[in-house]
Image 1 (tube, rainbow, N blue to C red):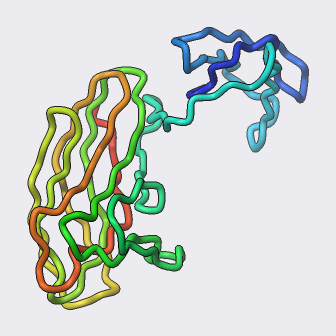
Image 2 (image 1 turned 45 degrees about the vertical axis):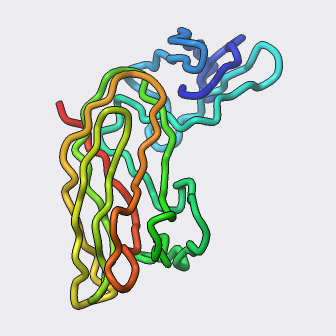
Length: 196
């Protein structure tokens, strides 16, 4: 359980009161041993009674057992003025009005062990939009050139390569280098797929 600083007093399955074993992995995470067969395969409830008040870590954890993670534009920290959001509906959950080099995005997250991801970006960029940006975290840095398509509604995909991270807290940023005459893009998300 990522981001839980509080210690567990008792952990059990609600359906049958079967006690579960927990282990503290580090100051922010605990691990719960689950049975091979759950009492309800649709919606098993796990009760976690805490010792004292609830204490959490607000940094998102990219779990090692989840094969694909999504860093949505809606979840990014926006730096600079003038950004706005789409309406959040299908293929409109983007950040828009990305028109200057002093506008940039960042995501802060934590990995509990070393991991490698392939990074794919989903975005919209109509005719006249596009430019160059840098994707960066730690020692990883990649400059990417994108060009607008003839459609402002067609979702585009860009493979941004492989990102290898040690265990720890990371800040991933997208910063423009140059913007064509319109806007850089309408960013939807970064998809991080674990490499085995």
